[in-house]
Length: 114
Image 1 (cartoon, one colour):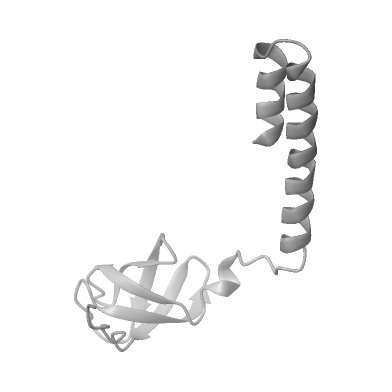
Image 2: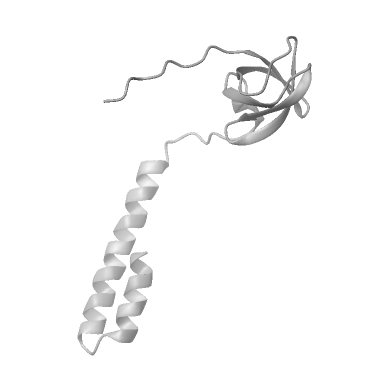
């Protein structure tokens, strides 16, 4: 973002302010890249199907025993040993190919409004 600002300042400001603004913005841009690199380098990437197991989702198409759920923002085909109506919270217990095995989960407690 600051690097884009540096280019715009270089183009639109009169001399010598264009060079001063561009250098300052470029320097801040490099500091920003370094900050985010340092902050994010130790974080584990959380993607892939292995992160589904244990996740809580919601039934979007009734499970009878096959249906569809939304979990982690994605729609998945799901199978359950029980019939579960639409809107029921579920927990993913296994992944078989592209079908997730689910069980009914307790609804999370509703926090009182303040």
